[in-house]
Length: 536
Ligand code: AMP
Ligand code: MG
Image (tube, rainbow, N blue to C red):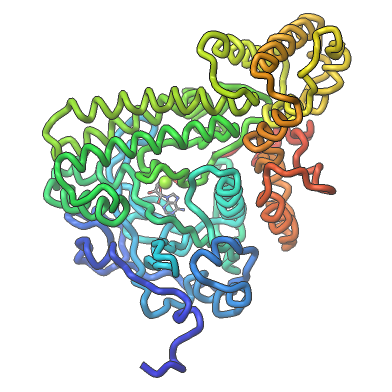
């Protein structure tokens, strides 16, 4: 090949497409909505974008895949990551998966608005799948058009990068590009569709395989393919487990149970509510995947869900996420059972999930409170009482923990702050000051004393406790109303807030001078504002 024909991006990205090379393709090549059986994917080309423009890119992700800032800011980059220019080495495809939605088997789902470009291997040998979300229809588009709008693309792009910097396992995002085309959406599902700007996020992950990829094969009785796909997954994504065998399948499921538990505990630590934990949205790598109607707890309300279509049953509420994960893991266990032929090892792994979740949660809560370790004698009560306290009046979870870290407690009771001072100290966290009645004040005073005694048992000095707490309790999370402010601006053509947030959310645990505003509790105007309080 003449080197002048090779673009700079082709030089930088080293493709090695195991998925399309090793797994069976849909023999049909037409891009029509259909059931795709006996195949793991369909080849499909992205739709060309009318006038693509770069909104933002993640420099950490760019570096990880081997792209310089200069390349990311080039015209060629926009052409490639809007789907307009398919590089040699890419082999675009959409994968086939199914899933349980809201507790019911939904049959084939698949990449309906995602087109994978291929897999690259970086300089360090790490594998990344690059995929475009919103690049047009695929055989799996069902009732959809395969496109994505700017507001949901901003939410996915910024949140996945924010999660990464919070230390939460997640899929990543390389770029956010507006297509220059309009997309029709009925935002409130009320029969008033509107034109909205279209956008494409280039998402990345070592693998996007979901529980639903295994479920669809099991439900269709395609057991040979189930075995082949599982072996492929183990060899590609879990090479440390060794060559596939019955024992390795069991070890593999056990690992999925553990990583899923760890992901959930991270969500509990930071107040993240996924919103649609269907089995097609559960990653086998334990990554947070598919950022749709997610949200962050504002006032600590364990029953809260950001998903308006789930407002009745609240299946995916904050405090139910660990139960739902377990339910989802059981669906995966059912799907892979034919490979193992025994129920017992799978049941044992589900027990592992329960125990690992409990142990990880206890350690996490001890860290959040700045304790040396979780004391089984005292800390259940300490935490339960705190949860009651936080719900007694609307209290911002994120701000509460930062203020708790800032409180001096390593002193004698005689020098403890008065209730008045305590209320003042936590004032930034309270949503409705009228709720701060005498009963609450007594509770607060009592709990802080309980906490003071507990911390003093550890003999941890305040400054050390503060330092430790501020490493696990973020100052900045991607607050729902802040996302909406950035979206409002971007829809007017001003991308500055998207880029400002990308920058601030890189260091979520640090104090950032001049950026306090982005850490503040939701203002009253946003309480019922669509997009910040209600999403679906
Ligand atoms: P989600 O709720 O995002 O996990 O999506 C569930 C299923 O619907 C997946 O198979 C998606 O690919 C598909 N889907 C969602 N939105 C669209 C869209 N705009 N066009 C085509 N398919 C979609
Ligand atoms: Mg999904």
